[in-house]
Structure formats: C-alpha cells, structure tokens
Image 1: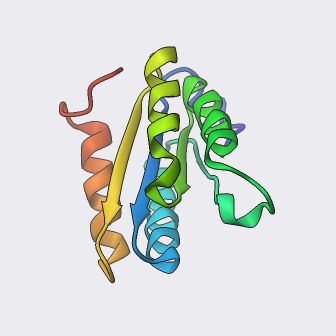
Image 2: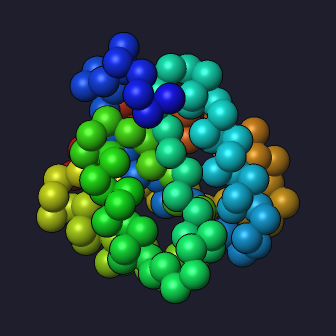
Length: 127
C-alpha cells in the first residue's frame, strides 16, 4: 500500500496516536483502523512500538511524523506516556496529529469508524 502511486500526494497524512488501558485493545483498534483506511484507498502504516526492543515514544513518534508528512496515515498503538513529546514535535513541524483513546473492550470497528469519520470530516484541523 505504501507504493500506491495513485494515492501519492493526494491524501493528507496524519499520525493517529492510539491510547488506552489495554495493549490488546490498542492493537486491535489500530489494526481495525488500518484495514478500514486501506480499504478506502489510504496509505497506512501501523507502528507498534512494543515490537521493537528499547523503542521509545519519541523515536516512534519521529518515524510517524515523517510518514505523515509524506501522505501516510501512521497509526501508533501506545501508552499515553510519550504523547506530550510527540504532539509537540508534530505541532512544531505543522504535521497533522490526533490522539484517540480506546475504552476498555471497546469494539475495534467502532474506534475505526470514529477515526475514519474524523479523517474525512471537517473536524480535523491541521496543526
């Protein structure tokens, strides 16, 4: 999906920082969002910081920012702990950023629908 020339430069990128109490809930919501957005023709990448030993929120946030600046929806299922630093970096570079909190055992499809609506609706404001 990242090499889809049709989507290049036509879809605005954004970092979606997914927080919530349970790692499983965050990951399920991130995967559901990625599937839904990819089905709509968006370029999507899930950056699961828990897959990388020693990865910190700042580093993963920087990768997400670079992807978002290049038209990719970068989804990061992470604890809220690093969100302040990541948000500040996105604001400084004027890169779109949003945080989504997943309630415990919330249906991932509900979260995915909420994010899809935010990305396509008028409520998402560029930084």
